[in-house]
Length: 255
Length: 272
Image 1 (cartoon, rainbow over the protein chains, first blue to last red):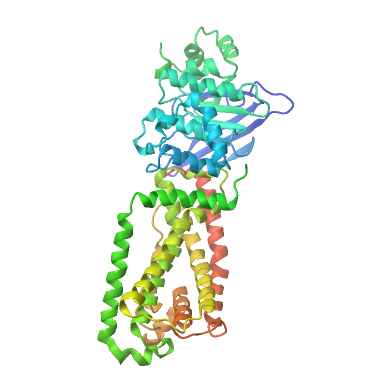
Image 2: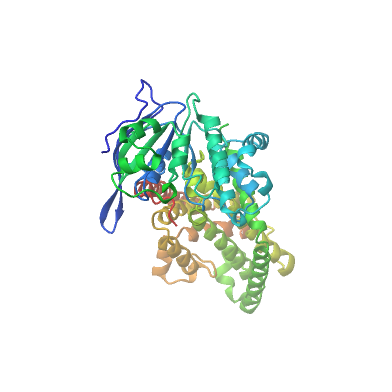
């Protein structure tokens, strides 16, 4: 189950995971989170990770971000990825939105002028400027989610890692964020996105490849069309259910 | 677009200035606290009068000056011991540790840059103690040797920051207070001569006091500020502090590296 290989087995993939396994200690036992995952992706791809809670999506993203060390296997991917974590609690609550952006922008090597230029580029899709002076802790979930995406995109990283970036977004905002990902990464030389989501329709609409994770293993991997063809499914939800090997379909995807 | 060291330091300083600005009342409280304790020890010194003179001869004989330097730099020691661990804890509680570590900032830089506000504030506190003592209570340091004082202070900081690294490792690993740093801080009050000279302690405690870095630090600081001692006079204190740094520094770096690896293995960097 975990030995599927990605669709971009070209001569020089940008991202390669080879037999990556990870387990966490819990009450004296090891709880598996990733089980011998093989993955290979090339430039300009957008990979969507789908799977139920606890299937290993966040662990996979954190392994790629260098925040979690795998127990075994090897990881090769661009250095210094942009990372948008799944938790809201990843900014300084008392600071305003713009001060948070200034702080993380400076850490990313952006001076004031570069930061402003970049924020102007992102503004049509992320619409943050109206909230710049608002303390982060008072911002709505949707603003926080867009801010997290903005931070990850500030320095146009070669590898963009997003953990459920559209979870708190309304449909329109979500479409804009996904449009932004396509605009900046789809087909881009030397750059790619790995993105986790429970929204299957969004994954099918946006990603060039979909990885279905099930209890840490890759249950399916391929382009949206390939996955539907392989499972004979008419809809993403049916394809997901067929690959996942259970009837458990994420709530957001249920017809 | 690589972040320069000065840019990084400025970014953290600016961030912490905003935090501080949201709690200005804290500064007023600290100021009142400094004034109250300075006044308290001024009157304790008047009570003691010349009776302490023989024990304090090496420091100019004035108990008020002796104890004020003790409490001012004892507070400074506390900052050096705990600032690294508190910086890590702050990032854990905000949930920003992972975000900062994925934005090109190495862990040692993170704790250093994140602690600089505390160091500046500690310097300000020392200035407040000595300033209040001078302005309101007649403290005078006419014989201070500032060059030798600065050297002792630098070696003091190195010794305590070495312990601070290990303390940060404990916080990273267990997300709870570090008993070793707490013990050192508590033992310093009794053994290091913060409130009274070490020479009045019984022999066993006096020997034990040699194992506390603060003992050598306060001795050197007082000799240079009150006794006009030069670098050669405080060489034993400087060498003792250097020895602490030489032993504790590598241990601190190693323990921090191990704690970081452990957190990445357990996936606990984001835990709080």
